[in-house]
Structure formats: C-alpha cells, structure tokens
Image (cartoon, rainbow, N blue to C red):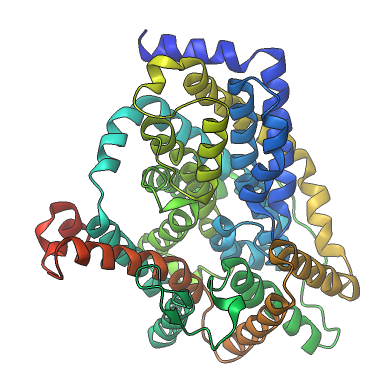
Length: 473
C-alpha cells in the first residue's frame, strides 16, 4: 500500500467506536493531569498502564499516546495562569504567558496556546506519516559527539534568555549546570556535591527547581507586596484579531517544524525543543526586546514546538524501538509487555498499530482543541481568585507535586530553598530561564561529551572531524 492507502487503513482503525472512546479518554486524562504541577505525562501513562493491559494492543497504545500528547497540551494552563509549569516542556510558555495573564489577557494566552499546540501536533503527525523511515536513518547517525554539539547549540539560547544583562544570564546558566552535576557520577560512581546527604545521590529533580524558582518565588513576591494585587481585574476576549493571527502564524509554523525535528532525536524531547523555538523567535523578531513581557510570539513558538516534539518522539520509538525520552521509555515498556516489538519491521508486521496511532493523533488533536477552547473562560477565572486564596493554592500545588513524587520531606526543604533562590534572583535582576536551561542541558551535555571522549580515547578532535557535530558547533 502507498502512504495514502496506509493512512486510510489507519483511520479505519482509529475511527472505530471503541478506539474513538479511548482517544477521548486518553486526551481528557492527559489534559487534566498535565495541568497539575508535579504529575506530568510519565505519571499519567504509568497510572493508565494497568488499564491498557486489559485492551487490544492497538487500542492500548492509542489511549496511552493520547495521554502523552494530552498532558503536553494541558501543561500550558498552569504555566500561563499560575507560573507553575505543569510539565517541563511548558516552562518556556510561562515566560510570556504568565505576563499576559497578569495583564488581563489570560483568555488570549490560553487561546494562542491551544491553537499553537494544535498546529504543532498536526505538523508533527504529518511529519511522522511522511518522513518517519528516512528520519529514523538520520537518528541513527547521531552519536555522542553529535549530541554534545546539539546541547552546546541549545545552550547558546542563554544569549536570548538573558534580557539586558548577558553576564547575569551566564551566571544563572552556570548555576543550572552546577545543579545538574549533583549526584552519583554515571561513569565512575563518584559522589559529587551531595554533602553527605543520601537524598541527593540521584541528583536534584527538575520539578523541584522549576516549581521553586518560578511558582514559589512568585508566592514570595505576592506575600511581600502585602496585599497589593497588580493583576488586571478584567479578562480580555478569547477572540484573536487578524493582526494577532498574523503575528503568531510565523512562530507557530517555525516552532512546529523545529519541534518535530528535535523530537525525532532521542534524548532531546519537548523541553529542549520549546527552549530552542523560544530562543530562535526572540533572536529573529523585530520586537525581541519585548519577549518576557507578554509577547504572543513567546507563547506560540514554545507551545507549537513542544507538541511537535511530543509527536516527533514517536519516530525513533516506532521505527527503531529506541525511546527518545523518559515518557517514550515507559511507552516502549508497555509495547513490549503487550507483545509488540517496535522497530523497522513494525510497519510491515503490525501496520494496524503504527498507522492506527498516526491516524488517532489527527483525531486526538481535534479532540484536544474541542475540549480546551470551551473551557478557557473557566480556566481564566483562576486569576479572579483573591490572593489570600491563590497564594495557599499555589503552595499546595507545589508541595503536593513535589512530595507526591518522592515522599521526601528533604525535597520540600529543597523546594523552599529554590523558592528563596528564585526570589533573590528576581530581586537582583538574575533571569531564571537560563538556570532552567543549564539544568536541562548540563547533564545531557556532560554525559555525551564523556562518552564521545571515551570512544575517541580522549581526542577532543572527534567533535570537529564528524560532519554533523562540526556543523552544529
């Protein structure tokens, strides 16, 4: 069968009544869990795996895939309304989404995020359908040296995330890389910067840092204002005028393509894609100096990129059997338990699963749009909550999110410490975004560099002799 016939076959699988129900169920559960800081797609998929084991393999993977991209889609809500990213891939969305919400444009910010997410997911599905086999071959050509170069390229986003003071941005990024190095060295098993605390052996969780420097720091700011609420009391319409649609269309299209391409690379994922898209748009935009103050391009770019990357991560999973992220690693385990072996032969041996999942993503993106748009006015009412109720609500979200992952009181003290750090950074003009970028990329960059040097017997020239690595650098 050619691609069109295969896609029609996939729609035949996805549009059966039971699979339509599982698409809706997966998208709904993923959206709700994505809104809650601390859970995210891995937790959502893990919770649904016992249900998936009772289903036909095609139905099970269709439902779990819906949970995955539904969580990415829904994660923007708490980022925009509370500055508390629901998932790591929506941190960049908060940079401009939260300022928009504070100005009373929460409705527009959520609408932009919904449309950008829908576009990113749709572009990702088209890419998955058309170029999965050829892109899987490109993925194989990426070794440790190429991944190191890609992470270095990602760290150059510090330039555009630093605001007016590049030095302070570099300091923040360095602190982020330092935090990424805490824990047991993966190659030598040496303890690094743990200060004798067993709780730090596995490193510092990303969620603790993100909720601390963003959400909890915002709580400290609200408390110190002593009741002076600077939020706008009115909520603008969800309707986007033609000028706003034109402004967001370019960043949405570019972010969708960039996100899909980054998502194809194992280990990169939605978080790296969203930061790269945000940084790229800020560099090329004529109004780049307004990013971080409520620019709609700063919402559209990362939201389209993280959804494009979520779909793109299915390319190495389905065609090579290689998980591109922690979430797809859980999906890989589910596939294997269900008796499905992902890889190059999957398109021939189990076409109902591959093409059924591809077609279900088309349907799922529409379901997510239909689910989210009517609820935006309800979500936006969060901003009308009095600060005396909103501050405890944010604190509860942060505490439950962190404690629910590890059941460790030590992690709550870490959360408080990073909240204080985030508040001090804001008070002294140090941007938080480069710290998060350094934390995300630091560990990946170090691991790739050391693997490349082991392969080359310590020869640093390996980063320049490999064409892809040299081009990225």
